[in-house]
Image (cartoon, rainbow, N blue to C red; front, side, top):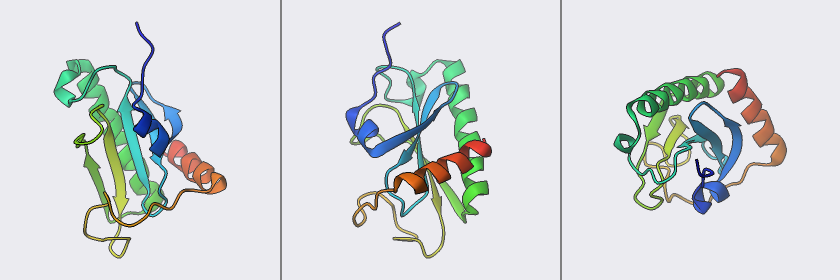
Length: 134
């Protein structure tokens, strides 16, 4: 089986915190929003329906598990989940904690303002809290 290849934009924008059963779990490098990204480790997949039925079930399970952990850690008002892929075709699922009054509430997070990168210490602490709650 060929090695898993990740789109360079997903690799650049997301900091790896764990490998789950199917997906890489990454933190989007913008601390304005607690924003996680799940990337199924399957080459050449751009749509959920391109996955096998078992992988589809695993993606749903991992998305729910990560969303639940993110809600516990952040106490967010709303957890947004989306797999858009208009720019980056490789299948990936965004799991974003939103709160009333956050940057651009209730508008979208994409393309809003300038990203504020995580410091190493903040990112490690946040990742540890997420992993504890998975």
